Image 1 (cartoon, rainbow, N blue to C red):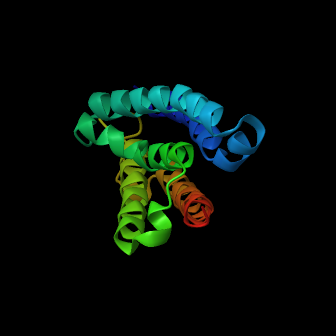
Image 2 (cartoon, rainbow, N blue to C red):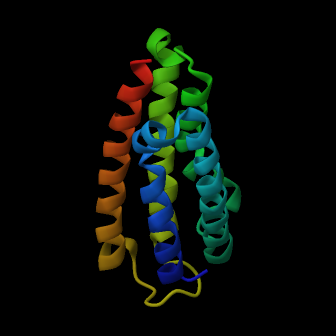
Length: 151
């Protein structure tokens, strides 16, 4: 999958996945999980196709791009207080967000078949998207983390 197509397809899906509180407030926890699942599966497929086509990482790492969102929606549906009680789970959740950022940055770098073939630190599209991915990761992590610890 070309980088431009990947960006155009994955950006709206990830933006909708970051609206967990809104989905839960409007639809309830069960329907928010259903809508999230309908968004998570295509997101995983798009990231998998990008990693497979460009051969930057093994495509199996695509699951890391949906793992933190899945944990949030499943935890909200199950109404667990696991994050409020266990610091180890909080640290593991933070690590899943770091893995999300790493896989997302790797997927937007230029791969095989993309033009232009530049080094990542000389590619303005990669630099801009890396900055936006880091902002997305931090803001969504803090939003979801505070929501999960206040159950």
